[in-house]
Length: 109
Image (cartoon, rainbow, N blue to C red; front, side):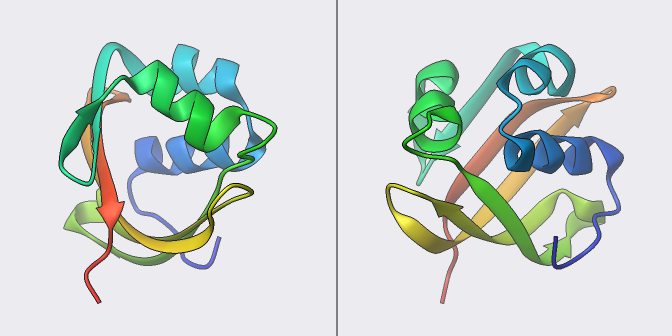
């Protein structure tokens, strides 16, 4: 990771993504009713994460470039084997010790 994250829950999210650890991601990182959006559109979380992060064809990875909002608003160089590297913005809602929602999309230039 290029930058350390101050929110331990978000840090756990990034670690699970970078390790390709789908089991930990769903069992220990997200709430059971977690939701997400991509570029402002609501997505099916399980289908989106499988396609964009966890499938062998995706192999998603996150490198944090900037962090604000107590570590819950990030600019990330997100890389997967399908799309290459993209500068993206991630906003996390943390409930207790888990992520209950995340929103991602292209980072403003």
